[in-house]
Length: 485
Image 1 (cartoon, helix red, strand yellow):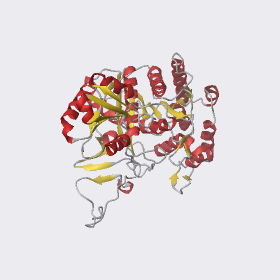
Image 2: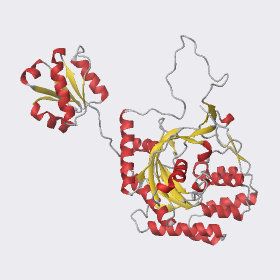
Image 3: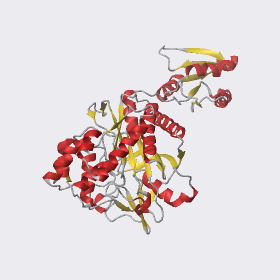
Image 4: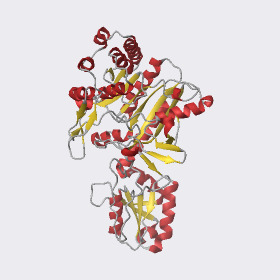
């Protein structure tokens, strides 16, 4: 685990003195995972793979092409835009020494994209519409579907475009993809805003210190989680959460804090226009109006709503912002209702790529949290993964191994997932217990009678009947199995 006290850095080339406890000779290991990491298998993993398949197909449908980048990037190339700790900007990422450079496990898929575009822009066609699906890592507090390693599915549009059209495309693909994944239109809302609106207010309040400015933005971004009182504390000296943890505030004046809190209570564009007159806020309001007009031409207008408290905590966003939240209750494994936060979010970052010498392309995009979405779909049971468990051939005597292997080849050649039980000395009951525990849909029993008559006994393991089985010929074997699986 990365130690935040040393800039999240661990030297791969050598083990720090005292950093590793030597095991005693007979000491037994405890089989457990570090906090924030999770194994997935059987139904849960099948559902995750099904989700990824649906999402990827939808991204392709919208005209995005795929990109894969490495898990590690040179630290200075992707930077760190997550940490609340101004004294340790790398505290929320996993960073390692690698010779002359430090390298960081990617914490999102947009920062690696910016490096890729800057490195390969001469070979790309713009606007460059890319999607990427992969794991990211964040060294932060876990719990309630918040992980330190999780899978993201991103789409981004890079290049000079009509901003409102590109941002509307991002908003629409969120709504379309989530409905394809099994959420109904009543179960989520896509909330949009524009960071220029808040930035203009910050400028209007003469908040010029960049660290203070970022604290204000992150305080606003936490409104749904900590409420108005929590935001007020973060705007002022400090916030102390229920666990006693202290987060340093922005140290704003009473007047500055009051102005921001009043802004957070505004619900519609007309009221906003009457209050905010500074040029940057007016620009952000106009961009939001233009986006909503384009969205109104499509079928997801009712799902995409303005919410001016959406600013996104990542420092590289500078315009359009989007967050998608549930309109339903979600429970943790203990049965307690929890707020798991946004399931799809993103925004516009017109200066992220310009950090690289000689390259300047605006960008906009969004990210779906696959594992967080999986957490939800497991509860509402709205999508059924394909059962890929094999048919099991049960062998009653080793002298029938030749016939069993011929049957195994026949099944596989006809596209049936299948396996042969690997110990013919075990009785039929033990073989069927194995099949049942594994979730096999069908057992094929091969014994003396079956071999003699060139037939097969099929046992339907999905049936509620105690002994649902039939004898079939080789000619009808495939069709009979497909009726069950």
